Amino acid sequence: MTRTASLPAALRTRLRNAWHLFREFSGERAYEIYVEHHRRHHPGEPVMSEREFWRRHTDDRDTNPRTTCC
Image (tube, rainbow, N blue to C red; front, top):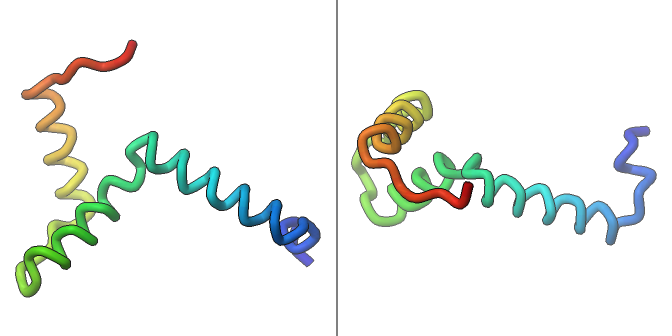
């Protein structure tokens, strides 16, 4: 039996939602969001690999710095 199996369903749901929210705020889901958008709005066109996406993402942030909170 796994550790999460012993947790009540409501707590598991809350933890899962918190994890998804954390990934959203940290930017970790950026590639997933890109793929969803690309497939929805540009069907039939090739999707960048995850490696290429992060390389372009990082390059863009280096060449076009934005104001951050800290």
